[in-house]
Image 1 (cartoon, rainbow, N blue to C red):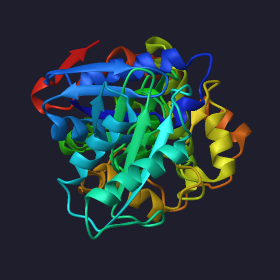
Image 2: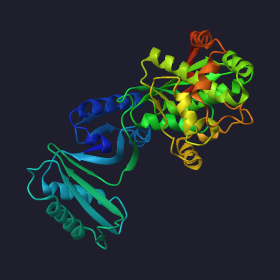
Image 3: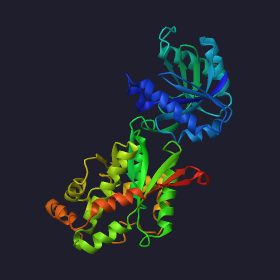
Image 4: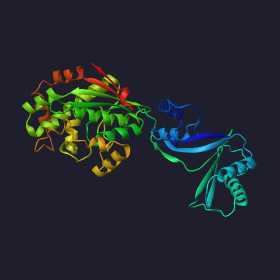
Length: 395
């Protein structure tokens, strides 16, 4: 008998031709997450098994890994005889108080004698015979004992805990998250990671109009995302002050946000090209602010050819807040430090901007040189799960 953590794949099991790539990536991601533990991993197309003495801590860490549907704590037996299975199930049930139970049998070894139903009945009858004052309840049992008869072993386990689901990080490429200090963008980043996208982030800093605490807030948001993003998030910090001041000086006030967002998109697209990212990701939600009407999105999006992914675009604010609380970013996001998108919001921003006017306004400022300078002088912050491991590069 061996104690084992059993990982069920869920959505990954729908992959066929490339399932080996997804499973290998999941295994590599788990290796990084469990680097400080002593463990061994075995896996096939049906299950991933982790052998370790640190069961509870390992299960806790696995709940931060995308690509896992369910995590179960169980036992592995090499003797597959039905009599041995009965004895092992009985011994396990004797350690838990219960009044009702159910036996569920799964057979990946289709040559094993009997059917799943007949085997479950045999095991159930044996349990009823040897433990008094209990009953079978197939609808709402106190214990649901799952017996998996595999090719080379038997797994016995009970209810597990749900994993995060989705796909393993980096299986679907890389994206650049426009990370502000607000509630929406970190949630968008989390949802992108869930779909297998490894993220880097971009933050537009505007000192002295924004405080150092606004940047610190973004670093802390990235640190939360890092534990889901395979241990690190890089932040490309863009000095946006000159661009913002030139826009305020030369562009009509009602178009300030439209033009600032267009420049942010252009810079983000250029950063994507330099890091081999395939899409821009942001926290825009339809109709939430003036720059997020469909017409505004169209005019702003026209500034780039790069795909823009908006994971929360159909969420309402309460749904976004609920998810932010669940993943641990909400309390950070509501710290009272404004980012550059909120400090210069005009009283009446245009909600149906004209693309031709946007083009004309761009001619009023030498944006090409400003954008080049902003990218050339950017900082890159390496934000890991542990604060002490951070460091900065200056390009």
